[in-house]
Image 1: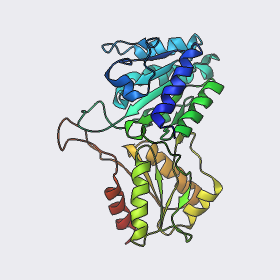
Image 2: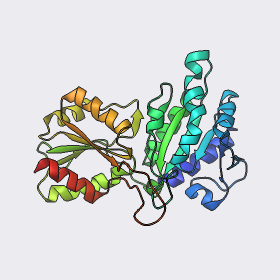
Image 3: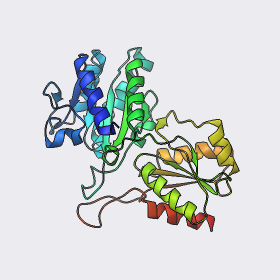
Length: 299
């Protein structure tokens, strides 16, 4: 089976071979961005000291080079997002000129400080003109890349290093028993894996859990059968995220409530600033935290 890491590396090599650009900081050093890049030197290295890097990428996109822009830590998007959301995302609507670029934005956690860790995809879901995905499987990444290449819009991929070893496709909809679910989980990013673990353990305790995996954050949609299952739950649903709760997770929860009238809740990053060292991490919901949250609702 091909892992997510291998899929990204293969498609990146193909992208370069087709004459397109791959741009970013420290691409050829420190493990080739988690092993997701081919070990070759025809990629464009951008300076670590400059916050104009996204401007260079936008310029390359306007020139028709379809760049892949690799941002090692999603927290860096607070410095990189301006040119993408305020120019690339608006270019076609305002001036009739497409600006197709693919942003690979990588999340991780673990004592890496206030500006580096976790996901920050909510920065991009608020702006018209950009498509936002959070692919955690090889097939999802490939589908998002194919959509980028087939269209002319900016595409933002919210990745997570914890998914790079994954070689399985996650089901889009899953009910753990044949009866109706007590509660449904709608996990995003790395919480998709902890949600599966939590759901399996909760079923052993007699709590029926449904899961609807979310890989496309904008435009978000669910199928009619998922909508019906959510409406039929006894205690509603929970949106799980590796970003702060006040962003896309709350927006999706509101959309689901409007669609089904089911009571919705959000479980995401703690609302505090991350630091360096033990005890200062800001971590996404793990299986134990999800289980505790569900039990408080159900019992």
